[in-house]
Image (cartoon, rainbow, N blue to C red; front, side, top):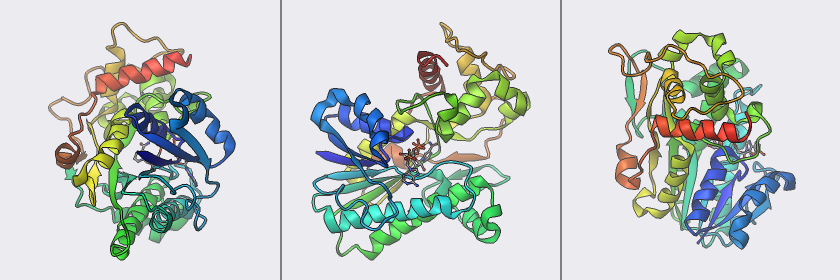
Length: 347
Ligand code: NDP
């Protein structure tokens, strides 16, 4: 069984590929240039011919994936920009939407052996900011970001631009499936993930080169000097929902394997958190993991679990439990693995 994974050199994709290869699948990964394929090739060399890399230079070009989809049984589409410094909304929206629809069109026209497509979606397409605690489900759609980006354009916040890119890409996905339901021979699942944390196996030079979500984790959990800027109160009051990158990778495999995942959007979220929860977990490690910079302390014990803790955003994960049967790693496990990963890199 061969799976095409787009954006193979990315944080999430590298773990998705690792998961498939470990479970005996063959993987074809797409990257934007030959040089970006070098690290994945090295990392997965031990799987021999089961792993190959192909170059898809520009995912927004028509027919970009036409060759890549040939002969694969399934697709995991992860390639999409996730950064918070876009000048104008289209910088994120265009590759997110055109990349996804281009992949689907290539699968429709040239993927005669494709049976299932899994798209790495985001809770960005579900959540909206609220002042009262809300539990979101797969029935929710983020209209707020679309409205803000429409009215504010390039002045919209970077987070709203990113959220709009994921919302529009997912809306276009389901529309494509509906519009082509008579012709398509595959079905599709979207995995809606919150902030993804955990160890990295993609190419990194230094902490500054971490991908967006892992960089936020490093700044708040592993670098006391960064934390000083936001203050201790921030850490006990702020947080969101999270998932370990290895669990999200497993969810991609399960979503390809489970018949009932076809046609579903599925929230993949471990739990709510406050930053102090991860900081406490980092400081509680025994034996301790010593990094090149001192760990922040925050205000120990002031995270979740206080009588007055409020989590404004949470997600209902009944569907991932029922369809995928996914078991999520804990804050303690992920913190230990992530700090060990930093230590191994000399950070
Ligand atoms: P990374 O930045 O590590 O990976 C992004 C991948 O997408 C890279 O392979 C990158 O290629 C590719 N990509 C980005 N922009 C473009 C573009 N314009 N054209 C072609 N390829 C592009 O981020 P993540 O691994 O975190 O993100 C992977 C996916 O997971 C994304 O779809 C993201 O929205 C989704 N996601 C991530 C979450 C998180 O917290 N990390 C949460 C929820 C969803 P290149 O290296 O060449 O730029």
